[in-house]
Length: 187
Image (cartoon, rainbow, N blue to C red; front, side, top):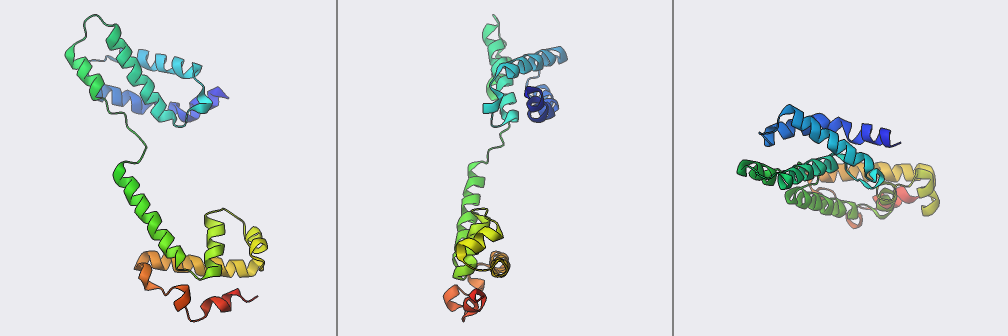
């Protein structure tokens, strides 16, 4: 099991880490990089791999820690090496503040769009997209047929896509909808 985890979550990133080391730690020879990688694998092997959320980030963190340990153990550490270690910017897969703000804005926009759907369409859409319910489960909860659920989901998806493309104000709200929902909810 551990072999599979390492093969899936660590091995695909080894070449990237080696390139990263060559680019950022200029004084490392190829054999030094080999030694670092071997020590990183040894540490990975003894870690609780089931608790590691991101193998790539964990591998980079191990490498950076190994470089820092080498610098601390060395009697004479060139200033360049300390600067290299301190300047290492481990690539992160976590979104930056700008991406988080943009994602929050998109989520807010989606919530406004969904709120403008007719009630039955909105409920079916929320159950399927946000609660991951099947059409059968939605039909049971809403006490309507699966065919009606399918119609509600179709209308909801069409309207959501249209509103996202054209802007929230482009489609009337349920109250402005001239009875469209009541036609849909009969079954």
